[in-house]
Image (cartoon, rainbow, N blue to C red; front, top):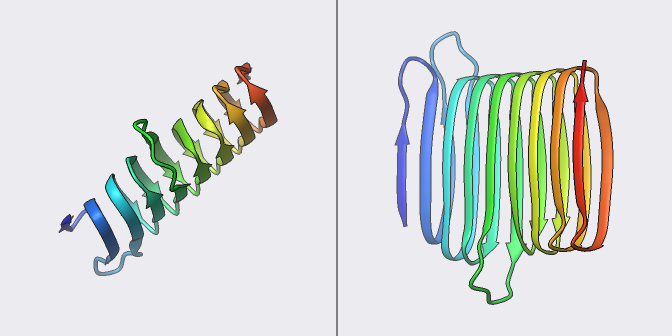
Length: 191
C-alpha cells in the first residue's frame, strides 16, 4: 500500500492509494476556510485511486471491492461531491475504470459500478448532477456537462452498452436506461 497526502495554503489535497487493502481518511483545512474531505476504502488486489482536491468544501468517497479497479478524480471549486462505488468479485483480466472531473461549485457525481465497465464524467459549471448505475460487463459512459443546473441519470444493465452524452448550457435533464447487449445512445443537449 502506498499513500501520499499533501496539503498547502491553497486548500489542496492530493491522495494516491494503491494496494491490496487501503483505507484513507483525509481532511484539509486552512484558517478561515472550509474543509475538503476524502474517504477511500479498498478491498482486493491491483486497484488504484488518485484524487486531487482544490478549493473548499469538496467531498469525495471512493469504495473499491474486488480486483483491477482504477479511479481518478479531480475536484476544483467549492462544495463539489463525488461518490464512487466499484464492486466485482469475479475473476477477470479486464479492468473497471472511472475518471471524474469537477470544476465549479456544488456539482454532484454518484456512480455505482457492479461489473467491468468504464465511465468518464466531466462537470464544468455549477450545480450539475450525474447519477449513474452500471451493472454489466464492458459498458461505457462518456458524459460532459458544461454550464449550470444540468441533470443526468443513467441506468445500464447488460453487456457492451455505450452512452456518449453532452449537456451544454443550463437546465437540461436527461434520464436514460439501457438493458441488453450492444446498445448505443448518443445524446447532445445544448442551448
